[in-house]
Image (tube, rainbow, N blue to C red):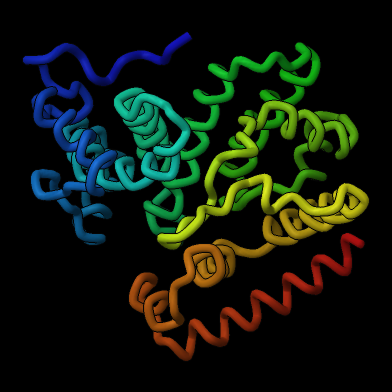
Length: 286
């Protein structure tokens, strides 16, 4: 079932923001055509964000509205990751706003974590849940139950420990085998077409099917991926953030330093320490 609407009808306002519907949909349409248009969306500085969270904790509901308005660009940037899936951008934006509001309601100021670092996984998670719920491929009820319980436990453990839990921790909480959690979560992942382009540099595109390796190696690669994911989950928030920015988003050490507010030398030291810990955790798991 489709989640509660955040966008209403033309002429009304975006109920979580107060922005006119026509204006909001105009912004969203530009996400599809030429990137994010942030000209009419407010931008909050870190000090403003912190002040608003303090006010929200004291019961100031207007602070919550300002936090939502000031972080819509975050939702717009996240939904761009799902643009090539043929989904309605309006729907993804609505669902992303639900994830944003959950992040605002659950954010803990006492944890030394940037709000965007905390919110992005929650927004992505909300969108992925929506896509899974609307997935036409049937998954057995038992697998689906385990998967959704695992996702619920994962959210609880993230809120409790301020870090991503390992598969083993989720399995222990559910009192099931680790492999059962992995199979269940894998079963509800959205399928990808073999003919979906994953890279295009102006010449011939590279499709998913071009990247499929030898089936004999698939089990080994799959196990290595699980080991890597579990090792990544054991890193602290700053280590994960630096590795993500450096190796998944392709940013330079200087760009990472500017983004998280430390020196390039500190980024270099933290990156080396994170990679060292990653190798250690992978060896321990093996």
